[in-house]
Length: 317
Image 1 (cartoon, rainbow, N blue to C red):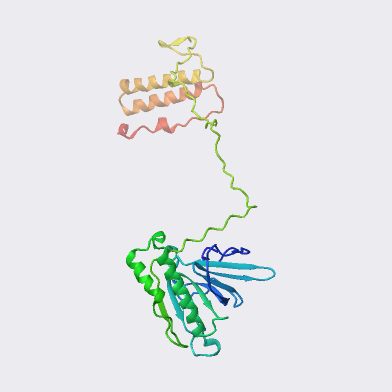
Image 2: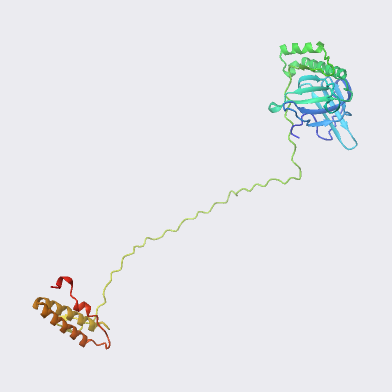
């Protein structure tokens, strides 16, 4: 898990102690990790009261082993920022609390992970006080002796030296507890990210070949065509016999009609200028209409006479 700071990977054996490392306390108790920056946080992980705990002059180590699993972890004396003994209350049943030893550290991204010891051989407040005194002296002595390597300033080293011989923890059941600030602490490093599964499929990256070129589509050029309006030329017709000085082309079906229409127009013009009186024009018009009807080659054809019998309004008198 990402928030796990003080527990090694499952099945990890911490092995023997370092050369010259001295054991200061050894016993069994429950171990857990909490997030002190989160209000009413639940433990990130827990180990039962049968967990073996070893306190040395360099660190605290804990191991819990069964036939199927092995759980272990450690905290170096570089990391603890606060050491607190929290006595249990005097209640019984569900509201009862047990005495705890809390090692609070300065973690990454403003977090405060804490390693907690309780129960087992720490059943009473006196037991917790004695172990807390051992841890306080071990941390203070370690930082004073390695001040140059850790980077502890001289004023802080002098204050740490007082904790080696300073007042011991003295708590009682149901009390408020005691806290000691440990100068010169080093922030806890962020836990390593879990490795990806071996059988996870590799990511495939589709890249475009270097030799590939996107084809360029160009619109073919069109020749500019000039469209000219065709000029209509009337086809020549053969010269027809003239009548009254005019020539008529032989057009099938309409030659006779054209001749009659021409004659009617000339007769109308002659009648307007030669016979100005109304009676003479009416008689001349009737004669022309009768002539047109009698000269029509199509039998049974009717003629609309209203156009001839009803002159325009401006001609009525």
